[in-house]
Image (tube, rainbow, N blue to C red; front, side, top):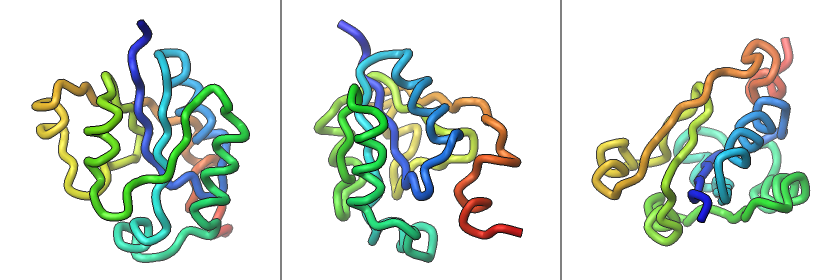
Length: 133
């Protein structure tokens, strides 16, 4: 049975850097993608994403029908991790684990965390697409 891979992200202004992360995950197993809730993005990043949560989830789901794409929990970041029980959580090169989730907590749950290399970060980063020079 292929491993279960979990991705977290806002996926605002979906770009080739996001695509790189999803495609790397798909090479490794069955993928579930958790799209951040608007309220959680505001709480963590201090601002709302440009695209609402349903739009972002729909874009990712339409681009990757082979992945299971869901919205995150409204308050408990660990809830989907406990439910899905992934073998591996993949992170983008500059991504942090959401909320109070730590690598130690995940390690205690038997979950590996791996950080991917950057894919053209000077070109494909959501903040660059949101705030053009």
